[in-house]
Amino acid sequence: MIDQYDRNINYLRVSVTDRCNLRCTYCMPKEGIAWIGHEAILSYEEIGRIIRIAADEGITKVRITGGEPLVRKGVVEFIASLQGIRSLNDISLTTNGILLESCAERLYAAGIHRINISLDSLKADKYREITRGGELESVLAGIRKAETTGFSPIKINIVAIKGINDDEILDFARLSLAHPYQIRFIELMPLGKASSENDGRYLANSVVKERIAALGALEPVDGRANNASDGPARIFRLSGGAGEIGFISPVSRHFCQSCNRLRLTADGHLRACLLSDEERDLKTPLRAGASNEEIGAIIRETIARKPKEHGVSCDESHIRKCVKEMQAIGG
Ligand code: SAM
Ligand code: SF4
Image 1 (spheres, rainbow, N blue to C red):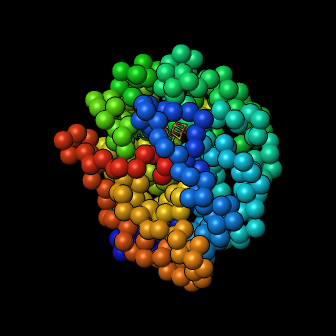
Image 2: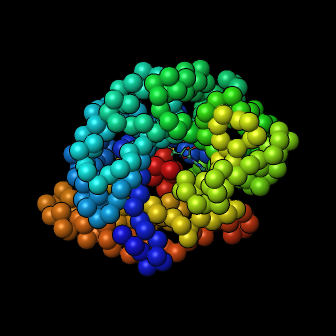
Image 3: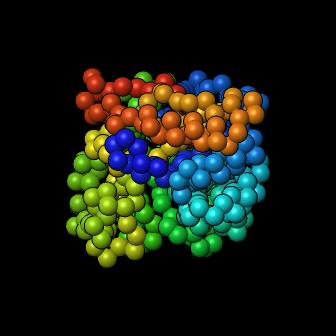
């Protein structure tokens, strides 16, 4: 579906749960959050129905996310059930990797072949600090398992945080020399209550890129350094590297003009913009017996109201913080 700014909205990110086995400092506030009640979370049947209707409206790509999607029971079977939707040509997953080792093969068999794994430190104690208790070795085992299982591409997402993990930028970049991973640096976004705990920690990707240049020239990959594909990521390769390096810069370099996304939250709301709190309730009409046509109309209306751009910029005095936590939206 083409929106009023000529963007083709064909990508739906689906949060299957707000729950998570980690508490990353930039994603959740220190005191934790109240989980959404079981009844308020969409069932797999409800999510599947929305995805089918969205596919009829022009969605061709779906990413399963959370919270942590792998903590929801039955997620692999749910993913397998999406394979029958003919107009979907891409189903992928974003995970923190903690539970990946044990389910990588089943996920692959269920039809997920592309995976994004979030990893913000290669040091066990630092990883524990950022995630408030996570075990680095579990994620590394998950990444190794994803590689031997045949997932491709494997994208590793790092949120670069000033004074916390910016001393590891080169270590992460070096991973792309030896492994066929796409190492992606994501700028810290001010979201929810966690944003006030991270004041002053934003690091622009221009700085990250400059530091990586110490390892050698960053060669643009096939014109993908300029939003040509890969969604919002700008993709480079260190000379001779097996993998790639990507930069996702939602704060310093808005990619709103090419944003093709919609988001379905775990509690059944449709968001047209990650950084705007405007959302449409799909769950209430769904549970009140709305027809596919009525649900489709809400999807079309949400797309029609997709904002031209978000208001977040690196000038902190202009930062507009969205109220919902990232883990409740799905990233
Ligand atoms: N739990 C899964 C994970 O961590 O990959 C999936 C959900 S998580 C909300 C999706 C992505 O959002 C992760 O890559 C995470 O690093 C990113 N994220 C969360 N909060 C963020 C923030 N404030 N700024 C930038 N990225 C953020
Ligand atoms: Fe959980 Fe992912 Fe948020 Fe970390 S970023 S707390 S792993 S949802």
